[in-house]
Picture 1 (cartoon, rainbow, N blue to C red):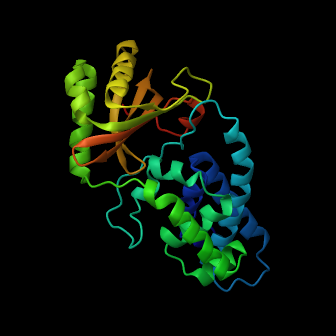
Picture 2 (picture 1 turned 180 degrees about the vertical axis):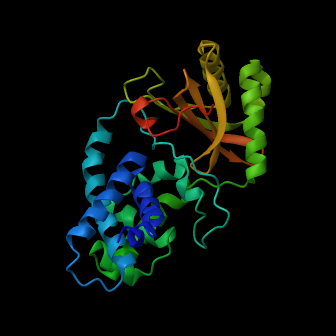
Length: 288
């Protein structure tokens, strides 16, 4: 029984994480889906995959409705929990899997209602047919099509585009780290796009900027100021976070900071810094 469920666990987590932007909540939803399936063993299940996806999607819609109330009272910018994930080796036709994991894209989804978010993800990321989506969310096919159209209108003009290869992204991240630690303002600014935006998420538990910082000069000055305040035992480790280049910063061997970069071409377009300790608990300690 567990083996049957484990075959679909990665897919269920992929849906739940994109819905909720939280690793911990996504894992909870996957576990709750397993418990619901266990309790319903006497039911006739024609397709186990469809059955499990329906359960996890509806659980996520309910969880997201309650989470939205908390996010409205969140202190400063809300960013998704960082997920250690390398770029997907292949892309789905409608939307690259790595792009759909990015911080920028998940933040964009926050503008959709829970049901709209589910319908949009199932259609555009996981490529389900409208008939299947209709059964999963309990809405008519016509209604689902309308939700996707509205979501496209709302998101398309703002959706991030990444034209840099993973190798280019990795190279720019290394240059970013070298410029930051070297304290060279001019070199740092040259890596940033003029309209760059930086978001920092402390959740009211760590003192960070409470509003997004825009513009290359302002972002560079802010980051160089942070670097000067870092304790000597701060250890950055280059990783892929949400399919994007980034690093985890460690203090005393434990995760203290997660940073990701939105990169297009030869410039950094967005920076996301997460220091809320509750969003870093699931990250592994510094490898020895």
